[in-house]
Structures are given as structure tokens and as C-alpha cells.
Amino acid sequence: MGKEPQFVFAASLIADPSRASMLLALVSGKALTAGELAREAGVTLQTASSHLAKLQQGELVCLRKQGRHKYFTLAGDHVVHSLASLIGLARDDIQLRIRPGPNDVALRYARVCYNHLAGEVGTRLFDSLILRKLLNRSDGMVNLSASGAAFFRGLEIDLDSLSAKRSPLCRECLDWSERRPHLGGTLGRALLGRIEELGWVKRDNASRALHFSHSGARLFAELIAGH
Amino acid sequence: MGKEPQFVFAASLIADPSRASMLLALVSGKALTAGELAREAGVTLQTASSHLAKLQQGELVCLRKQGRHKYFTLAGDHVVHSLASLIGLARDDIQLRIRPGPNDVALRYARVCYNHLAGEVGTRLFDSLILRKLLNRSDGMVNLSASGAAFFRGLEIDLDSLSAKRSPLCRECLDWSERRPHLGGTLGRALLGRIEELGWVKRDNASRALHFSHSGARLFAELIAGH
DNA sequence: CCCATACTTCGATCGTAACCGAAGTATGTG
DNA sequence: CACATACTTCGGTTACGATCGAAGTATGGG
Image (tube, rainbow over all chains, first blue to last red; front, top):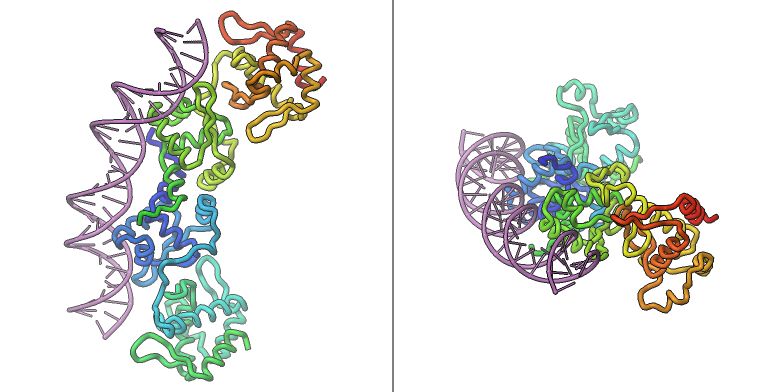
């Protein structure tokens, strides 16, 4: 009788307190790293690592590698529903015990990440570009639309020379503090370079924080709002 | 540390292969005994007993004692939904590995149970009485309606003398083969006595089977159909 | 009252999985 | 390149729970 139904395995994954803590943390919809999930569950990194391997094997979570981090998210709504049907609680009720990202307010607001603009400002810009269909997402890929190309040319960014490079023009980059995507790729790098050129932002000497000038902040806000 | 969320416990109950087999068997909606569930899971009665105690404690199953049997059912639709969300299969797909009740066709069709009419015929009658609102169910209790009283008086059953007794007039009795209720209580007993008097059925000498006469079967079918 | 059936409780065995320390791999930083 | 960070793999300990045999309780039938 060695045949064990698949749903028994799924249940056994949820049945461990450490893994359950991790899953609950992920119900918030945020992407969290292995280390953060370890702290959530109150176990060491080694233990968390083996748990996360099992959760992946059971296809309850998805993995996204980015640099030396591994960002985990729930594999889909069906996982949330299964959990909810076992608990009866809503997505909003979940409270994270840890807060992702840096404590420094300036760093959370705007900072450099792989040479592109990250933090609250970076994700707000990305949201705006998507909403206005200047960027289109499909299957985790991001592509520049015709109107998007016009938008960046308006900022005097040379798209042709960027397209010539081998690395992709647009990339979703998962934001450290926000855990939602901001604009990466060569275009993301070019954008940061351009707004530095324009004097809108300056890099901090000691940290990765970005400091907006008074007029730079205003102009950037208009950029996000769409004039 | 020591605080383990309730849904983790629920998941751990489903996560054991033996208990999962039992739960799957119960998704059919039938009430099954401890022994039958033990056979379903392929474990001994002792093991099944401890599993069922845990399932009760976790409020995944309900217990109903009847004689020396313990009939288990799923605690409610929420359990079915939780299971379904983990498997994605419908109630109809479930196939029992065992078949409850006797193998003898005659016994399955009609037999005596605590001196009332049981088997397929018994449950069909009960269904009909409920459907025509001659009986009303509430909270596991069964009560005779005014029209129901008229129905049984039409069969020349003396309800007044039955009501005088201490034991309840109407009871749901869980049917051995059908695993759905048939009519028990003093009224169930009186009804069987009456249709024996009328010559509709005769008891088998060797078993508990009941044999309908040709005309008795016709008249009883009319009784169920409502003339 | 005795026997059979249905189920429970106890006690012992055994396997598995959670856990962490230590060492290893991969990736970014100066 | 050295060094720090993020994560994985390995090995050994430990605790828990699934299982069954044996003995105990409850119910029904003759």
C-alpha cells in the first residue's frame, strides 16, 4: 500500500508549525527571502532551507532567484484558498512579524539597486508605467510599448543604443523593501543615470540612499502622474 | 513557541495516510462504523480507534452511537470543501473499497432492525414521509406532523397508546446497509407490526429478512408513493 | 447469565522528520 | 583577490506519533 495520495503530502506540508508560519507570512502576497522566512518561523536558516525545498517540491511556493537572494511567493491563489479553507481568515488579517528591508526611512523611500531606482519611489514609478500601458507585462517579461518608447525618448534617453546591448532592455526587479517589482534592465539603469544628470537626485556618500532635490521631487512626481 | 495554530492541527489530521483514507471514504456522505473505516484504511481496529478519536477532537468528524456501533460522518460541508480544495475532486468520484451491510440481496432490500422496517424499503419510506412533510426533522429529532398523524391513523395504528409510552414515538435509526435513516421509535415498531398483521410481509425463519407478498409489495409501494 | 461483537485503553516498538552545528557553494562588494 | 552575505548539504541527536498485541469495557442476543 505504498501509494500515498498527493493531497496527503500537501497536507503534511501545511501540518508542520514552521512551514505553516512561513506560508502564513507569504499569504500577505509579499515575496520573502529564505532568511526572513526562517525568522518568521523562528528556526535557523538551515532548517528553513530544508522546509522551503519541501514546499517547492510540493508546489506550494514559487522561487525567484535574484542575486544572492531567493525570493519565495505562494504558488498561486489555490494555495491561498486551501489555507483559507483551513483557517477561514482573510488575506488582510495577516500580520508579518518581521518587516522586510532596511529600517532607514531614506533607504526605504529611494535608493540604488543594481544601479536602478528602487524603494517606494521606484515601485510607484513602475506601477504608473504599467497602468498607463507604457510597459506591458506578460509571463514575467516586461516590454516597452510604442507610447512607452516615446515617453523615454521625451526624457532624452537613447533607446537605440540600449537595444543594441545584449542584456535585456526592461526587467522586473523585485524591490527589497516593497517586495513588489520596480524597473530594472538597461532601461532602468539609463533612467537613473538620466535623472542624476538632470540633477533631480544625488547619491548618498555613505549609504545607497538617493536624495531628491526640491525641484527634482516635484518633476519626478509629475512624471509619475503623467504631467 | 508552544502556540500551534488550530489549522496546523487540522492539516496534521489530514496528513496521515490512514486518516486521509477514512476521510475520503466519508466524503461519500455515508455514515461508516469504526470497523469499516479501519478496513478502508487497512489498519487494525485499535489503530483506527485512536485515529477516530483524534478526528473527533479536531472536529472533522461527527459521532453517532447506535447500539454497539459507532457511526462516523464528516462534521460538515466545510470539511468536504477543505478536502476538495486540497484534491480538486468531486463528491461523486469517491469509490468505497468496502460495501457496507450484508451481502444477501433479500437482507439489503428489506429486513428487521430493532423490530422496525429497515433496508432499501425502510429508507425509501422514510424519505417519502419526510418529503411529504408527514414527518419533520430538526436537530436530529423527528416529529410527527398533524397530517402525519392522520396518515398513521389511516393505517389503524393507535397513536395515543404509543404516545403514552416513555420511549420516543419517532426516532431516526441509521440503516445498516443504506447508511441513511429509516423510521425507528415506537411508531416504527408499530408500523412493522401493522403491516405484518395486514399480511403484507412475513419474517424469514432463518435470517432477519422480510419477504413481501405480491399484493403487500404493491400496497406498500402505493403507501410510499402517496396513493 | 454467558457468549459474541464492537470498540477502547495501555504499553512497547519502530520509523520518520524536525532540528541544529559544521562545513560547503554561490554571489555581491571593496 | 579577500571578505561578507545568503543559502545548501551533511551528519547526528531527539522527539513524536503510527502501529499492533493484549487486556479491558460496553452492548446485544440467546
